[in-house]
Image (tube, rainbow, N blue to C red; front, side, top):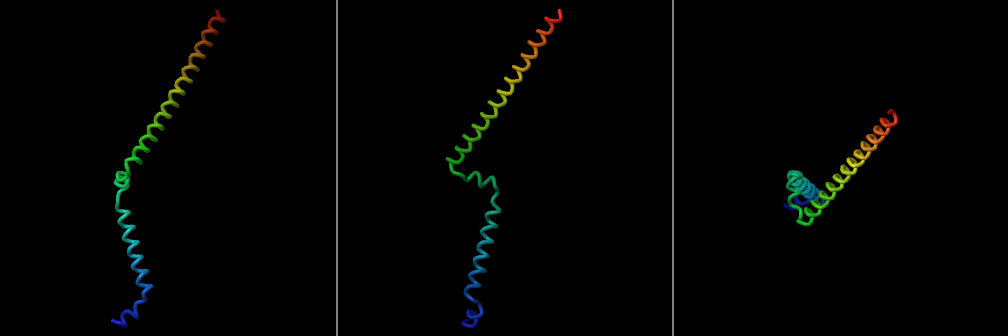
Length: 90
């Protein structure tokens, strides 16, 4: 037994054990799907994400509404100018 302990150095054994533990931890962490990791979040984090998503949706809808208003104004202006040109041609 003493010869076996002398043959195996304590530092080498610890390095191998640490490497084995690290490998096991990484394999377990990699096997958990990303969706399951998201579900394990706390209630506050999910609430925060929902607020952020709602804010982004609101911002996008405001941007689209602004573009539609701008397009409508441009169309109305073109119609006025076309009507004005028709009056000048008569």
